[in-house]
Amino acid sequence: MGDRSEREEGGGFGESIRQALLDAMPGPVCAVDREGRIIYANPSMASLCGGRSPGDCMGKPARVVLESLPFEIQDALFSALREGKRVNVRSSLTGNVKERVVLEGEVFPITSPGEKLPSAAAWTAMVMQDGVPSREALAIEASRRKAKDLLSVVRHDILNQLTILIGFLQFSEDFIQDPTLRDFLGKEETAGQIIQALIEFTRDFQDLAVEDPRWMPLSSLVRSAQERTDPGNVRIEVQVGSIEIFSPPVLRHVFFTLLKNALDHAHGLTRVTISQVEENGSLLLVCEDDGPGIPEGKKRALFERGHGRNRGYSLWLSKEILSIIGASLQETGREGAGARFEIRVPEGMWRGGT
Image 1 (cartoon, rainbow, N blue to C red):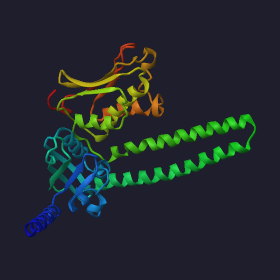
Image 2: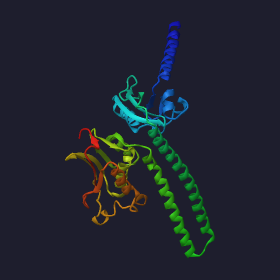
Image 3: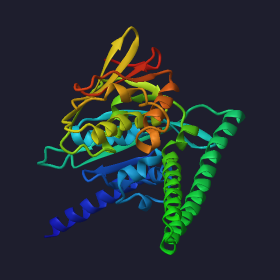
Image 4: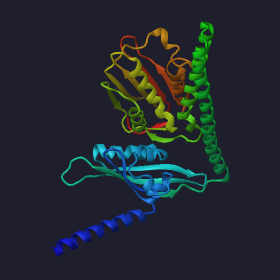
């Protein structure tokens, strides 16, 4: 009995030592379980994610806690959970207006005895200064962050006033019997709701003003888009190899738009494929489906502002985002043979094996 008690106390003491060592590490350390929740974060990790203490991270969804960090970190964590492989991750981050840092780290699976699949995955990294920014760079960074904050405040106030306006228009309909006036009120209410939707639509893209282009794994961008869709019984096949694209992170919206449009409008759809091929130095990315295709008469208006979902901002905005890196977007499918969208990325804006 005495020996067992000493072993148990020793085990508890050893666990305390391990906890203290992890807490004392200068770099961030975190672990995510198979449910996608943070099960450990040291003080450095909490600080990096904007929290005051590890308690601000514990038990919360990893996608929420890691939202402020480069997407490739959470992508690597979930890849380690799925595939059980170690992954090296190098990313840059602007923590505040005073410093730009490089996170040089590794993600590794944690497997419990007797289990084949990882029960958790952990990420740890060294935080290194990425040079000392000039005063001009500091001013640019401060301007971007201030612009983002001000846009959020103004958008919030406008949406509040629109909600009040739409509510009073709906309330007014109960006191008006004249069919002409009721028709006018209905059109005014619709216009208010459209304005409301467009303002909310801008929330996803304000980061264009503060997130600079960087080398990003194409597979991560596509996977991020997939995770925002509900494919149901539709099979989504991704064949993009180890390609990286120099792009702002919002490029993932382009793939989300292509997938979402196919899922929403291609009746009888069973499969969507995203693939790539090199053509004369350019990278051709193809998103095609086995739906009914797009009639020739509707193709010309596809990329016009004011057409389709979100009052036409989806495909129009996708084309605008791609233009940042000199890439193009066109639809080349045939009616009856499925839709086919082609993204052509110019030489120098992509790298890696095809």
